[in-house]
Image 1 (cartoon, one colour):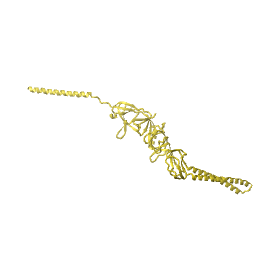
Image 2 (cartoon, rainbow, N blue to C red; image 1 turned 90 degrees about the vertical axis):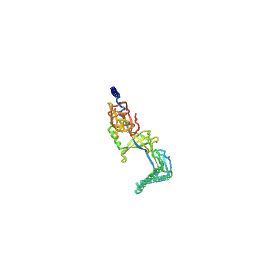
Image 3 (cartoon, rainbow, N blue to C red; image 1 turned 60 degrees about the vertical axis):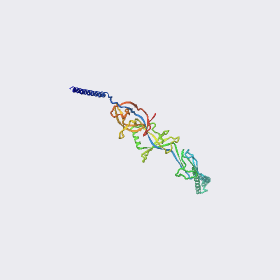
Image 4 (cartoon, rainbow, N blue to C red; image 1 turned 180 degrees about the horizontal axis):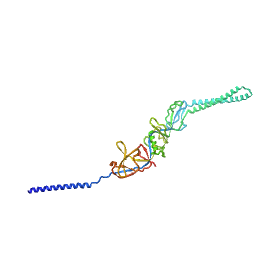
Length: 405
């Protein structure tokens, strides 16, 4: 009996301890739940977009062309006696370039002069005969036929004098053509003939070529599609085509360095090239140092117009869905995130030019995009005002924007 009593008390003690342990565990779990902190609100940085005045430009590939080109050809036949210029040098208009053997042309001139002198010497006697016959005709001392023959002889003598005058002038011109002169000022290239070469008048192969390099032309093609798009933007009022520097053109050389002098847009070709579907824009650039040479490949930065209300967003704020459609995350007035689809026109430096999807004053998330989702509440830790005004930009380029003062 005593043993059974002891076992019963032991069981009661074990049950009590188990109940007590369960209560302690339950109390501990309850205290853990009550002390857990609430979920943290994501922190983001935003940029407030504002309309800006932006000068839109486009880079177009092109090539340089000489302002004036003169192919030097002889105008008489003969043998080249001497070349009188240095290949690759600058020559002046009127400078003698080649000397053709003038001996035969000098002889022709002397012969014409002698014939002219003979004709002029015969004319006075014939004129006196006509005057005498006129007096004798009044007295009927000579026949009218003799008088008419004398008058005809005088006219023939006058015509012969004029004939030889023309022959003298022609011979003098031909003699002058033996001195082949530069018709324009510019830089002359290599000579295609040497001393002693036989040349013919107006031969197809030029003796040399002179090119005027200052100023110099830059011809760039522009597609008609781009031209029509630009015209529609002007008509819609999205671009102002009447900027003060509308006709100013900048140039990038083959190695990417900018050309130091600005050019002027001269004209746009009126005919479309059917093989390329483009028109030619011609600009003229000063070239005092001779940096630009004909045929050089360049990129012309042509101004399209001024967008008075351009919306620009940093490129890192734009994300794309699997189909490539762009969008940004914005923070609305209630502090919640919204996804906003965009229509992007072009890249401008490190920003995108947005044509639809954003309004002035909206806050675009710049940092913390990975931590948010549409509809979630966020905390703004920094706001950047994008107040750059008068920004000149270049289309289809990764170069940074440049401020215009």
